[in-house]
Amino acid sequence: MVCGGYVKRWGGLDRLTHFLVLISVLIGVVSGFPQLQLTVFGFSIGDCFRWITGYIGGEAFRRILHRYVVTVLVGVAVVLHTLSFGLRRKKSSILLTYKDLKDLASYYRFRFFGGPEPELGFHMPGEKLLYWIAAACLPILGATGLMMWTNTLPIGYDVLRLLHRVSSILLTAFVIIHFTLNLVLRDQWPALKSMLLTGNVPSEWVRKHHPKALQEEEVTWVGRRRMLKTLLTVIPAVALAYTLNELLKPPKHAVRNVYVEPAKVKVGDPFTVYVEVANIGYRDGTFNVQFSIDGEPAGEGSITLLDGETGLLSFQAKLEKAGLHSITVDGVSSTVEVAERPPPIAPELAERFKKLLPEAYGFMPVVKEGKILYYEIYDERNALIAYGFYARAYAPTDRLQIVGIVGLDYRVKAIDIDRMEPGIRLLNEKIVEPEFESEFIGLTVDDVKLSPEGKVDAVSGATISSTAVVEAVRDALKNITQKSS
Image (cartoon, rainbow, N blue to C red; front, side, top):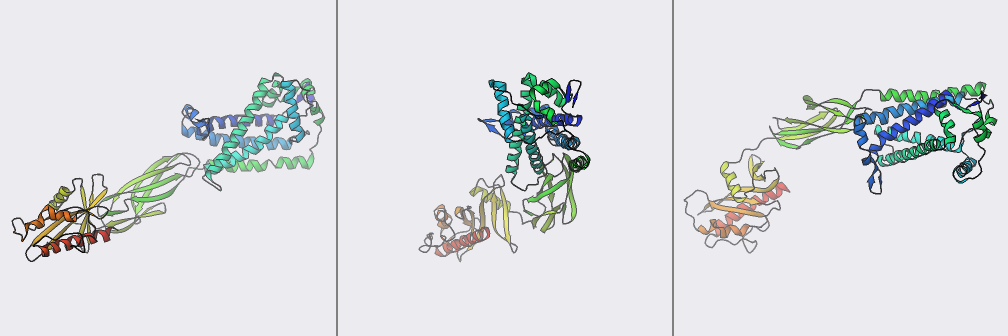
């Protein structure tokens, strides 16, 4: 429509749509680049733009910009574009054809290499190309972004992220190129001003650069067609309203996993309950979490998470009742096994273990049917380093006690054979001397037998006592091997 030397090129809805798309792309780039995982020639693009996060107000605000603001702007732009498209009366094809690609090449040959200027219609070929790039990329960006945001993964997360990244780079590149060329090419300023501000271009400019545009000023959509296209606006409007309704719901959480460390404890010993909590809402929030033991409340805590973030809560607890107990948080359960506390180790025996194994720090009796079979030996870091046993050997002439250390490979590491009580006379004193004790070092349960069947030589003149010692050590090794394996 020509009026006062100007041609109406864009209506108010069109200009607002252009402005919203441009702003949403700029905000999306600024808020998205700090999280871009792309390395070019050894440089991480995301790392180069990490400073933006702090400059715009932190990670929480960056997420609001990238998700809420961009989603709303693009959604409103789609609704306005659909409405404008339905109300538009003049004929102007936006379809990108092979001729448009040829015209695009011809146009840039004309601009930069002195070729003939092509005759163009209402739309520049570059405008059409950008339109369809946006039409393809924006749905991909929205769909993949929402899937990653809500952790709805119909395909692999890495594939979604790749599609999101490629679409964002492609759309950003074309938007920047299109607007940069419009700024650089001075005679395109009327088109740029029309696109965002006035909506009008001089008629002389149209005749010179878009001569076919005046042929497209025909009224083509009236009556039912116009009404149908207007009603189509309802579809993106409803979709936008539904999306906003979902995004504005209060944040919520889900418990992903509950586990207990250690899973087996003694009565009265503390244990830790770890709870993995995920924010499955659409913005950051603080969540109160309570755990129960056997259905009874036992502790609570709170955690603040960004949208989509998973954090770990921990609770300390202890139980005074032996048995298997259920730990439950929001319907997710784990168990802890509580055993009766074994009798403490005698201080004298602990000292003898430490004499044989200086790095020994703690001792845990292993009990069966009320009888201590052996001891688990731990270092200062509470790591199991060996097993210890105490045994007695009785012979008609000798009564002996044996303290031994067995490695995690079930071989004897150290042994001390001594008379039951100080001052008692032995048939042969060599049975408590280091020469006989060294016979046991490095042996397994299968080796601890008197020769020739085994690898232990009996003390001359004390064969019965030697046999009693060998059997006592062998029984201790059997208990350790069978119980620990």
